[in-house]
Length: 85
Image (cartoon, rainbow, N blue to C red; front, side):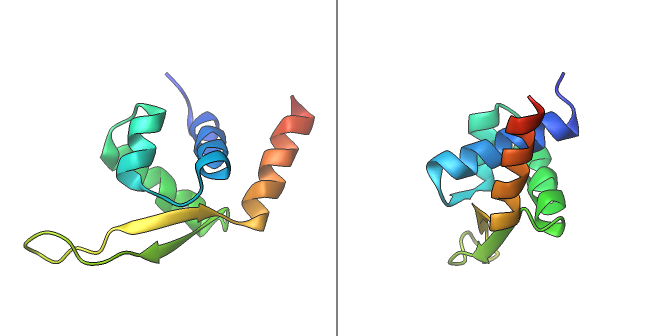
């Protein structure tokens, strides 16, 4: 089982490689439940490692899913992970 920091690093790497993604796409790439991906993304957004933009409303409730992109601070964190080894 992967811990938060491992998942955070994996999510940042995915966003660095793939660009802008939503939580569903990230959950599939990390092979975790979408609820867990949403919580992970919220936490790293609050840390300033990713930014998010609301997409067009979808579904009957008009929910606005977010699309996430890595920030400069997130790239700096990836560099730190690489140096740390």
